[in-house]
Length: 338
Image (tube, rainbow, N blue to C red):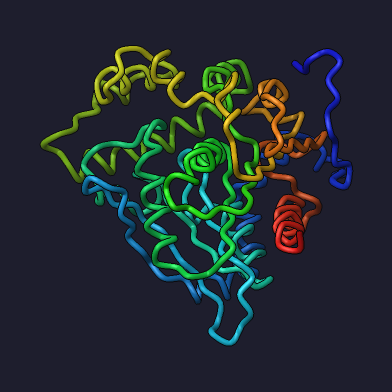
């Protein structure tokens, strides 16, 4: 539900036609093999230049990233750090497509995996949860200390957009020289995401349940002395599964305490000192847009809305070109030019 009397800033340059205007078609096509086949040729140069990095997350924690640098003869335009959504990875369609668009236009890129995402389950014994912001900040600071390319930008999608906003808040005191960040379809109030998944069409809850189960099976196999999720696998609902892992595998006693810990409602972003653009869509079936509109107005926070786009999709045509990739590119180019 939108706020009454809201003066939302719409970007109507994205206007999909026909069946592509449907939110579920957008969202499901975005992660499909059909789209992947069209992304891989575009991503060939990015992947060829990709280096596997294990980054220092502090306190012995290690996070996996993939760094792609321009050839030495190329003019440096900047470094873009990208973070995927929950149960996505550095290889997710939307991350590869965005990273390759930026790389092909002269930017260095670092595709960062959150803990237990991508092929990184073996790096840490503890399991991932969404309040692990300090290790992400530490890993990004480590990356920036290794890479001389400037300026530095960030892009995050969904839960990764939530992490990106929290990194931006902490950047100035952690030697992370961010010039601009873009948060696409960010999680603002985690309670709302659970509500939307429970009340929406079942395919989304099924999708996340299936991917989460696959992830925890990997963790269980790698650390059998520590984990036995046999009872957890029998729980059908995402909320129950989340609450069980919170109570049994995190420092927090209740689901509400855990969710509140990475919520960005109220004045959480009021101290934001890095120029930040949030892009949200009215028809997102996973993350309601209303909480974005409630965020405090600050000099550093820009909110842009589209009427269509699904969840992190923004597909313009059947060639699977996404509007968001060129939007991000253009936003960073504007930041460079001043």
